[in-house]
Length: 119
Length: 155
Image 1 (cartoon, each protein chain N blue to C red):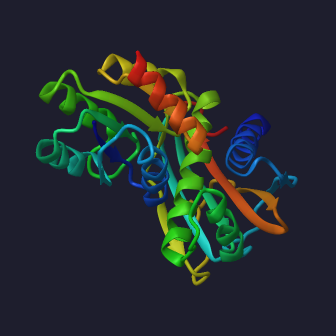
Image 2 (tube, helix red, strand yellow):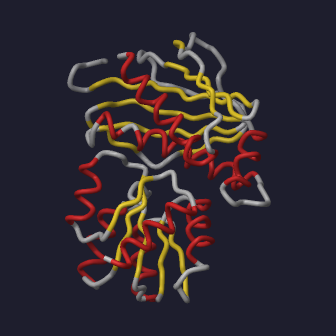
């Protein structure tokens, strides 16, 4: 399986990469905002995407919309600090498979990913 | 600003250190920043607030504190780039988590990071700025909250 990690924070991208590189993903790539994520998505065709919401240039909700239009079967785990319920609900409505609240730990990343992959 | 709003940011700040560093953060008593008071430490991150509120949420910390936090999150060779990234992510988490209580109308920008103490942290004139001291592992950092409710023309 191929994974695309999208977050404007380098340390979050690296934390997710370190955690999930040890799991079932054979290839991982990263992007630092929604616009770059779409460019990378078209080149890389990942099966799974982790997506931040608050990012410069294009936010994660707009990127979720665009990815689901391109490839509706993509599994998207939204990873965001936005803790209100309506944001999580909105992400799921747009086609995300799950929502993980920041700050993240290796354990929370692993558990959230297992959950969206087994759903 | 309502006392309840300061409590929201205190909760968000405590949650960050509970989640990432298994606790240990001691929150001091919030106070109103005096005019001209220098508050910036080595790194500062600014989150712009819009929507139902306007203003900003800031987090500022010394290099030594960020350098100690980085290995806890898996970064074994801390450097200034990672410290700058971490300060932005802490500010993002504190402001974003506050939406649990303040709602989706509390809209946050991506973090803007400043390094060095030159010029100090500029907050909007005419809006009170509250300082929440945070001590972790012997290092003092500060959360600054300067927001007003748009609907009520001030909180």
